Amino acid sequence: MECPKCGHTRQPEHIRCSGCDLVFAKYETYLERKAELEAQRTEAGGVPSERLRAIVDGLLEPGDVTARYWWPYAVLWAVFVIWGWSYMLESLYDLGWDPGFLHAINLPFHEAGHVIFGVFGDFIGSLGGTLGQLLIPIVCAVALLRGNHDTFGASLCLWWFGQNFLDIAPYMADARAGEIPLLGGNRGNSSPYGFHDWEFILGETGLLAWDRVLATITLNGGRLIMLTAMLWGAWLLWRARTRA
Image (cartoon, rainbow, N blue to C red; front, side, top):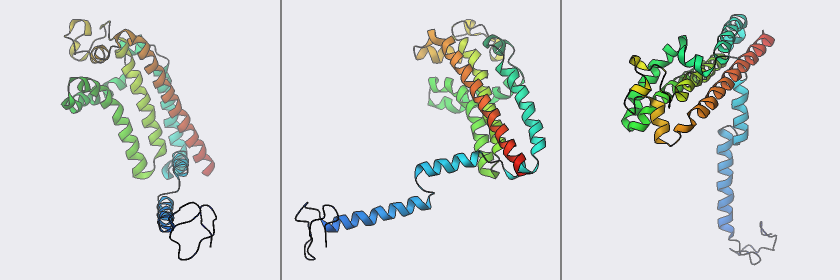
């Protein structure tokens, strides 16, 4: 018999290798535990990289309903592409002063976020409005994916998630100026400190002078997310069409 670590000759009565001082019983326990972990990992879907690949592959496959009725979904996708471009081509100024229909949809979730996260203090409460309107599309996407693997529906939720960044950006850019009308007709420049979310958030973090830079990053990030959602939807429709 040989030592599994150094290859030194091992006698049956030896409990420790005379060459590398390996304790055979401990090493055998280690091998048993390693085998158990590998078995658990296999049951869980393989190594993390394999599980990640399986998740990505699943997100790139259309659901059964999309595959069966791909052409109505294609019409819906075209509507969201046209609608999305109408937002993506607008400037910060236009988005702030004429925010469009979806702003009215996002606003209740924004205000609910203030209430929900307000229990964690003034700063988190102010940030909670933004968190609230960003979390709702994520929750909807997860529900669609877990419920019936509706990847196309999830792509529309991603589109909505990106559009929320476009909704947030002009108010972020308005942090110092305080000119855009807020809820109730107030304006940041005529309201107490803390009424304008982004004046308070950026003021408390020392980033107030960067309001327009951060807003531009947010705006372009939202545009990129919306574009990604459109491409994801297009891929799913193409896959559905080839399976029809």
